[in-house]
Image (cartoon, rainbow over all chains, first blue to last red):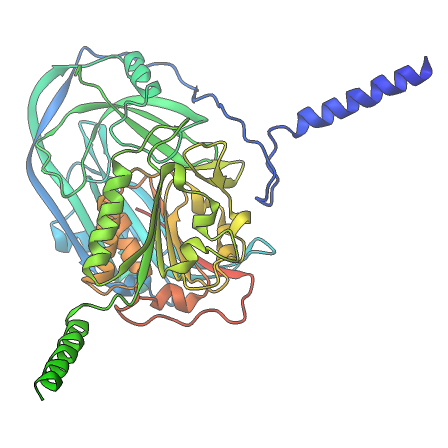
Length: 252
Length: 243
């Protein structure tokens, strides 16, 4: 009888260890491992917003797109502006390029370094400053314009020296109101993968923290005639990266 | 006398034909995974990307070592084996297009049958040690794990992304235009191309074996290429920027 209990216990331990190891990835990246084949696609951490029946469409009346810079961007600098002082320097720089558009908002400031990284200790051993980046994005009537074609990207070097400016900006004017789908209907489109861009990842485990209306600006090479309303699903992925997923809000 | 003239003429023609045909000094390879069993298909973007790479490099006198697609792509194309077929390590430049995923910090290049087929960095650790100099991984998330730098034994650099990104055929076209037409360094060519193509939700990244390579490498035939790291060590240099 006692032997039977030992046998049952041993089998249970083997089962528990076996099941536990199923789905585990070894942390050095070597095999063997078994991946979970399915994940919950999106985690909703917000309520659906009230959806208006219509939203404005804007006609593009002018497009400005230019890049000024050189390979000096990549060179190591003696120093670069702090993230606190960079926005004021960027504004001053912009005075030479037509100033800051009225519909521009500060989106991001970051210092960029070359990092010397030790793979064994998994630590950054040294940093070599390259530039401080200031990014402005477009907002129309309080609604953000996302995508590759609505950005002013300014890189500043030692003492605020302009290293590179890249501007893609479309001037728009009100065109008309169009009927739109609800945020719930947009969520259905999102789950079907009906996005305005084709992401090169399965988009699993993204936590949606807010949903709002906005616009999508195509890249600089595209002759975009209108900004049509989109629903933006804003959130973070499992690695804390900010994600804004664009879904068309128009009926067709 | 007449036969001798004929022989001289034929010899001259052969020599002339060698002179007039461009010599393919450098080689590239491509892996394109755009059809998936369990992830969203990326067709026709992969085909467009591959065509853009071919057009730019063939136009610059490069020749194609191999082009593998979808279910034919496997670990061996990424230099998994250290004998026989060396995959991407048989050509100076490799371009990969497809899905990438970050699972608990371990990043996976997805093959068509994923999750029953993928590449993780441990499978190519210290294996890029022959002809290859640069590898583009046009897929989401892969370079979020810096340990991919461990593949660079004598190879120089990996260009890719640490976040989500989206499929655009303009990316390889602009990158190779920058390398070939403008003679930019590889690092700056990638910076310019990624900034032009993407918005600020995307973070691009490069990992190089040495700082000299990161700052000075040009595409073969377009300018200076820094020496291989020798002896190999466990230190890499990386650079990331918001696009």
